[in-house]
Length: 141
Image (cartoon, rainbow, N blue to C red; front, side):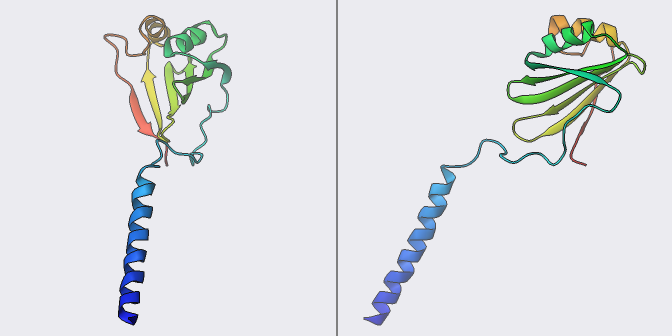
């Protein structure tokens, strides 16, 4: 009788663990709930305005009309937080993006700031024909 009770108790524990594991599969998160370890912000010396939910083309248009040598825009793009900065002195445009999944990346385009922004207003990206592609890196370091 004791052995039967021990076997039944062991089976109940195994079944409980199994059902707990199966039910947790149904609640798998689609993204990260915690804040990223790296805070996304523009470097010192940039004047950054916020334009809310926007497209990349609209952010490029805002940068085109922004007054100053080191300007930027902060916006949301389909749930991603994006800071796009243009340095007219160094001739660089940098995109810092915190994806809703937790991925933090930075891409930089060199040379032709005005040409790239004009291209982006019409095409939604900074990869103007005949110009060097962006260099990128993760921001986890």
